[in-house]
Image (cartoon, rainbow, N blue to C red):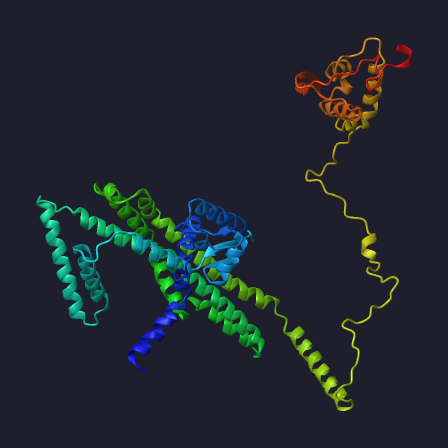
Length: 502
């Protein structure tokens, strides 16, 4: 194969990746804009129903802005999300509460990152970029050079340079301020690095999900002894972070970000850069917010990856616990017996012979099946309750028990009927309550009177009246109860005159 043919094959493979298939379509600008508006830069998972509604709303706004109909994806929000899932740009999963959510895949986030970098103004060559390259190469060589003397020489040179710069500043020499172009290039490169973090975390998360599916598939296909299978896959679960490239990369990042000192230093350095005198003229509010939320962005990405790793371990544990080797062997024996009988039947019949086989066995007609048998232990009385003080609990009289009970509806109903037919009727339930004897004026009797009023269909007015209740111990308590007027004694409950008063 020639060199250009090999390059063509590699380019075709690149264009077949979901990242470029997303960008290499006519509707890509609209789809990318919808993704950026819905998920933002942190790729926060969105409930499925909410994203369906957001997609339809965003497309309606783009349509009102005058975008040609041919440049807009067609279909409902649900149909479009399903289509984007098939394109490997969206992934649907369950959150901690068990609700279905959508999230961007690493391919979609990489496409968003590429578009975002292209929208930024940046110089192709600058002093800051050359200095960054030189510094990175120098640090890389200092950490990877196998020659001990070479490493020591690099460190000595760096120490001497830093010591000279420190002495110069301590002696009061003039500070060389960074130019605005230098700061612009530095902020641009920093934003580019930070914007790549969500797709990197998503790629590690997807790798863990793929490993989970591979582990389950191979676990179900194993025909080795159960103990050997369990030991093998427990070892694989423990080595997930060291067995793959993505796992090793994440483990290294996690070890660095687990250091509270480094996280604090990162937050302080970002704050100092944002407070630089020229930062207000260089950075917009969106870029400042992106830099300010770097630590939170990293922590959220770490949490999602750790959650996916926990799902791998939980899946292994659940399958191991629920796996029943005895049941699998019994099923295998039954299938082999069925196969044996089928072969014996085929040996004595023709090729077109048929035989009716019931899918389910017939039910057994049993009128009654005893589910529980007599247990003599059920007839023994329980042990007496022992008191902590050793003394019997004080007894209560019937009157004391009634005083602590609920409303006395029978006496209250009788007194209410008497009040309705009295020569001097009460105007409201509160006034009737005031006329009752103390034994019928307990706080609980208020609920009894209101219950009887509801049975009669009497409505309460908006204003409140005072009900002075008397507790069994003689103490008094005042309650504010909505006023309920009693009907005119000359009228019945329906508001019609009695015949004798007509």
